[in-house]
Length: 431
Ligand SMILES: [Zn+2]
Image (cartoon, rainbow, N blue to C red; front, side):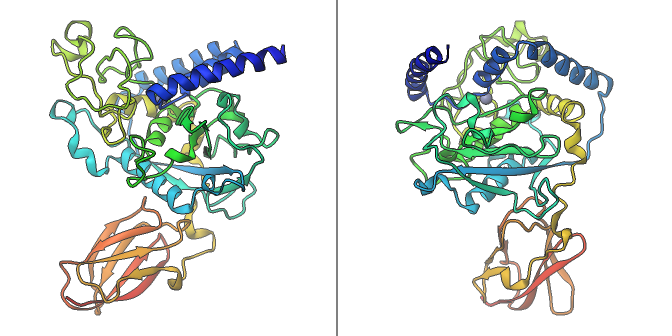
C-alpha cells in the first residue's frame, strides 16, 4: 500500500506541479482540508458542528461588541543550512507581520483603491498580530523559531504536513490554543511554487493547526520580480483568513457555490493572478437577494480571491462577522492568550539599540530597533517636555519613519513608549 501511494504520489506531484506552474496556485488550503478529511472521515461531522456553533453564536450576538483582538504569533522558520536563502532574515518576518496587521486593521496604504461600489463593505477587522515573546515553557522568545532540517524542501506532498512535526524534519507547533503557528519553509518544486501557502480551518487537529508559507512569498518584497505577482506578503493575509474560517470568495465551485458570506459577490472561479476589474462572472442581481437587483462585478480586491497581491486591498463586513464568530467559539482561547506580554517581562530596549538616522535630520528620521520589542506610541518631545507629535505604533515592527517636516530647527527627544516604560533619544532638526 505504501509503495503504491509513493508511486501515485509522484504522478500526483507532477500533475499538480504542472497545473500550478500554469496558473500559479496561490493556496493549498482546500487540498489540505480534503486530505485531512480523507485521513479522518469523522472530521467531516465535527467540522460541521464547529461551523454550526459559530453560526449560532453569530445569530445570538448580532450586535456583538469587539475590542481589538491581539493574536500571538510564532514563526517557525524551517531551513536547510546548505540553502541559506531558506533562512529568511528577521526583517522579512517583521515585514510580514506589518502586512497582516495593516491588512487586518485596514491601514494598508492601498485601501484607497477599493472601488466605490465596495467601499462601504470594506472594513477594519479589529484583529492585530504580535510576535510572541513568551514561549511554551515561559521563557523569553523573539517569536521567530529557527529550526534546521535535512530536507531540501517540503514540496513533495506538502499536505503530509511534514514541516509541522519534529519527527518528520520539521518542528511541532506551539500550543494552538495560545499561538497562531506560521511555518515558513520551501515549497518550490523544480523552480516553481507547488503552492504558495496553506492553512488549516478552525476545528481541525491542533497538532497541525496553523499556516504554512513558502519562504519565497513570505514578507513584503516589492523589489522581488521573481516572486511577482505574489510579492507583497498577501499570501499570509489570505491564509490567515482561512485560519479564522474564511472560504474563497468563489466558494471553490461555480456561481452556485457559497463562501458562507453574503456581501462577497459570487464568482465562477478564482481570479488567477490577474487584476481585471471588469470581470463579472456571475449574475447576482436575481440570484442573490442581498444585492437587491444590482449585479456587482467580481470582488478582485478581496484578500480571499487569487488575484495579484497588488490588486488586493479589502475584507468585507460579512467576512469580519464570520471570522469573529470563530474567534468567539472554536478559537476563543486566543483572545485570552498572554503570550505577547510585551516588554514587561523584564527586558527593555536600551537606547543604544535604538538606531536613528540621519541625525541631524531635516524632513524625516528613520528609527530601527530589534523587532522583538514593540511599543504603543511614538512621541516627539521638545526641550521643555511638551509632546509635539504622538503616533500609535502598536503594530509596527522594527522600523518606523517619522515625518519631521513640520518641526522647527532645534533639539528634540524621540520617545518610544510602552505601557510602563520608554526609551528616549536626542535628535537635532536642522533644515
Ligand atoms: Zn485559499
